[in-house]
Image 1 (cartoon, rainbow, N blue to C red):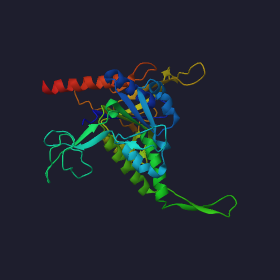
Image 2: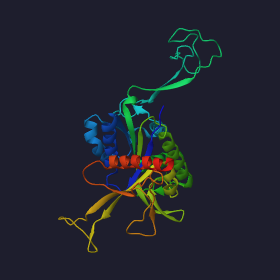
Image 3: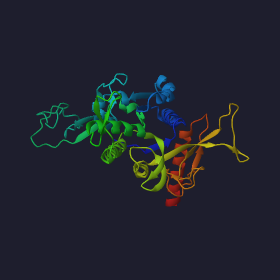
Length: 346
């Protein structure tokens, strides 16, 4: 089975349009291939609103994974990152269905031998040919009819996954907690306080989930995250927000493309331009390469694309209120890769 051509991270402050870009990715895929988008949502109702027109049109489906039983957090997120989907996304804790069917190939007819588990039957279920003991039958994977219609999987979002993991990890391993008293002073209980081990474990799980998503048999995988501003191991780096400080720089190599969505105040004559209501006018932009924010020249935002040198990929794109900026990004990325290929091969 195929794997995604791109695994894209989009990060930025809340309310700037990360989910809108995800919805644009869904619209781009549908126009290009006619395939649907599945959204694994842990970010609440705002995400649902961004995808609502596409959900109504049958172009996108959404699974609010944060509503599923927290006792099964690790299993649910693990399966979600592999492309599993609920039988009924509107019903919390609905059984999860694999995106593929696993079967054993008959050496004679190349059909399904009808194996149950690791044991082979005495005869092939497809052609009725006897199967001798010790016969090797290769394992095959076939996409389910439903998943074969899916072209994009969006994970909303990386930061919320980390929060869910931290909550669950402190529940199952409350070491480092502190004892407190209630207002009356006659009841004592322990509060779980996250420690370095919790952060490390959550980061390990997130790395595994992103790695799993690289094997989902779709054209594109998109992750979204909030923006982290702060020191990472004494390095002045901004990037996607996750559990712990060291993750911002460490997670960049996990993705083929990392886009920073930012809002830049419009300036005129050295002053910030405001609208009729007195609010600052903001120009939203997609930064595709490392850059310094205008308000702090000592810190650097991380960003990158999978276009190789020589492709003349732009470092920033405008994000207007109308149009499909994500489609523009993907088209420019394809052109840059083609141009780089031509330059390398002469």
